[in-house]
Image 1 (spheres, one colour):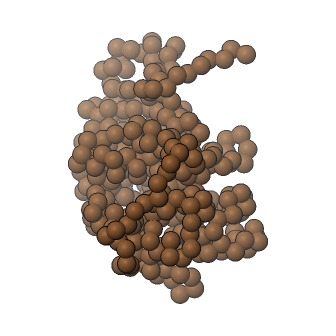
Image 2 (tube, one colour):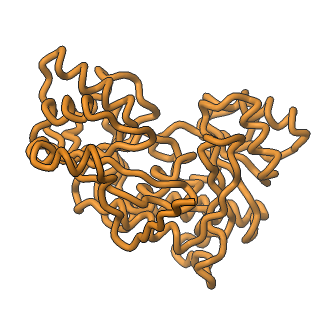
Length: 330
């Protein structure tokens, strides 16, 4: 189940499955075949994950671009991908059009929303023959590429990473939440965290709260309170932002779990977060797009006090289940 964190509109799994099947059938009708490449560039909406799942259903290989990127970055991605089509949010049409022109590419543009100049994604959501008898593409080899994501670009221009079906399932299993738990990740589908969450949502049946982007601590607190959020992924700068706001405004949020990632976490701000959310499990994770989550550090104020020397001086936490870390001293 999906809930729009701003409008509170709901979309249940049966409807989500239906529109994914319709989109897949329309893609087949339009000539998309297994191993074709498509790109998705949109902020989070109730329908933003539909092209992703429909691509899996048809054997098409999806890739993703973050809508906040510059035209130069977007051009870099498109020149690597050369997608047959791009599913683009209405806010990002100019970005994609200009980037395609700069790349000398003629990918088909499909706009997630109404459009006068390009085909609307609404056409792919329309009823179509074959829905009841639909058979998804069978991924015979789990080592085949399922999706193309990108490295973070820390050491240079981002590089394309071909992730296979096995990786996606393993990544999703790291994001297991109980059925009915309300979970929010702000990251777009460009990030492996959002892709993994989307698949985990289907596997485990928790409730995915959808917000287009992080819009400041006041907005986050409203969403958390209105939607009764129980779990959230926050990049560390966002956590600092939210923690300081809650402290200054004397706001209490009843979250069960906050997962942090993306940047190093300081002891000072970790302790402040633990004081602000005393009953919340704070989980600091480290991973890479290429390999998924590798380490997870459970944090709780009492636990941190008791384990201060271990946690902040010598130890980097524990590896996640099923992962092995090799330390190379050279």
